[in-house]
Amino acid sequence: MTLGTVAILGPGLIGGSLALALAEKGLTKRLSIYARSSRALDEIRLAGVSAELTGNPSEAVSEADVVILCVPVEAMPALVHEFRDALKPTALVTDVGSVKGSVVRDIEPLLDGRANWIGSHPMAGSEQGGFAAARADLFDGAPVILTPTQHTTREARRRAEQFWAALGANLHVLSPEKHDEMIAAISHIPHLLAAVLVNHAVTHGKLELAAGGFRDTTRVASGSAELWTEILMANADAVATQVDHLIAQLRSIEVALKNPDKPVAKTHLLAMLQAAKDGRAQLPARRPSKKG
Amino acid sequence: MTLGTVAILGPGLIGGSLALALAEKGLTKRLSIYARSSRALDEIRLAGVSAELTGNPSEAVSEADVVILCVPVEAMPALVHEFRDALKPTALVTDVGSVKGSVVRDIEPLLDGRANWIGSHPMAGSEQGGFAAARADLFDGAPVILTPTQHTTREARRRAEQFWAALGANLHVLSPEKHDEMIAAISHIPHLLAAVLVNHAVTHGKLELAAGGFRDTTRVASGSAELWTEILMANADAVATQVDHLIAQLRSIEVALKNPDKPVAKTHLLAMLQAAKDGRAQLPARRPSKKG
Image (tube, rainbow over all chains, first blue to last red; front, side, top):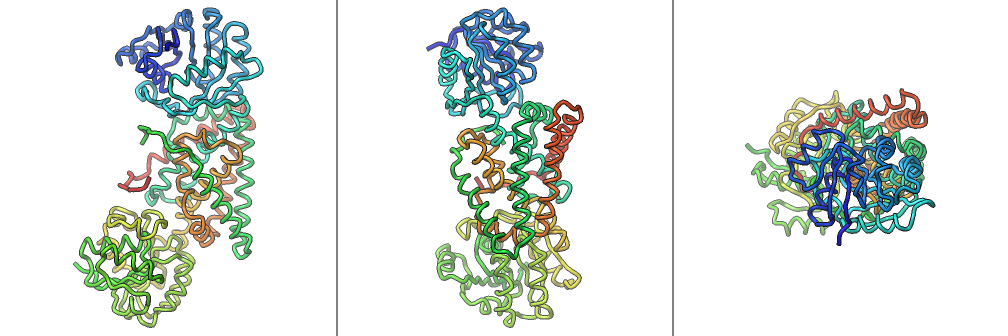
């Protein structure tokens, strides 16, 4: 099976891992990679990836059957605007951005009638790390969410499913809005709270006393502050709404803690902690990972 | 060097690890272990630990130079009341409870003039798991906090320092109140938030989409709901006060997210995330651990 000619725009952790995975599985007829900086292109060249490398996005996409946008979410619309006249009308264009509402809203009209567009979000690795952290097995068993709208063609959806399935991903389908809400709950809000916890502990605690639990609970707070500011801002509505829900939960816990002699206080805490324990038992098994 | 005759009351994860560590390092002249249930005593016997086993706490402490309370915090006062008449007046009595204000307040008057009492809190492992999870190296390099008060004798402090140092621990000294405040910040609040995050994700997200970050952030939420309800209730004042601080932090983030077009919104998020990233870089290196 071949996916034809594939263009990867932005060879960071995700784009670079796509290039390595496509090459390793022999899935493409040709691979072209666009990066804005020549330093990034040199890095790919040195790694020996067999691909046509270019600093011109139109050149990268002009022969492509599949185009994958792997640049930061806020850079996508301008990039699409730059290359869209060079697209083959039969091309599939998708992305790997971690927010979908704004991306789909911005890109869909830019590509309308010019290509088959659908949004994708592979839940793999972190957006950190650049090409140096790329690995060919990043998508094996990883959840990938497709976010079709009423304007998405059948062809776009079918070929995006084929693309990610060939890389070993587990496919899910959500509307862009539902995607953003769910990802806020399982990724953006946890990230925010991890950061709040570290700052809280620095102010009220003593980090040298922290045990392994604290280290794990706050691991993601070591991610790039710039990148996560962009992500949170891009999904600001869903995150803000959910912060409000969290505050309501914390208030109910605070009330229980301030009334320790009322039997309902203990019952409330116990039910909350037991629900969390039971909920966490539903998590899928951990996939192999290189992360520390 | 010998610590003399040591009595361990409650051979769960911490008490059991103490027994294994003392035996392995050859630190005691004699070791006695008390457990309320005969099933627990059978477990120790089967493990081949060389100790006198008893279901009678007075018998366990009657010859002891060092007595370590390893039962749950809420069970300690009644237990001390039960055995205190059998203590040698020169004995050191300490505990391993994860809250200190209430423990010290309850136990200090019970032992006044009858033994050398000081509170201890080894920050090692979790309180879960029982004897089956015990390991001889649990205290190697672990922080142990001693919590003297104005009534603590020099002898109590000196001998508690000697005891934990012999086990390889890193000693810290805090008042019981300061201990509870700091442990709330680095242990109880993170635990609470991990549980809140799981429940939030079950309501607003889809756990099958969760990546490794979510798994790590919420790991501690798989702990025993009963045990953590007791811990949170025992430290309710400090935890409630800190939940209030957290809510204030979350409100400021919510305001930023609701005003994404104001430059100050982005600045606020970026500063918060950068402070967390920098703060987390100050964490001590991870100690070897068997935990998954």
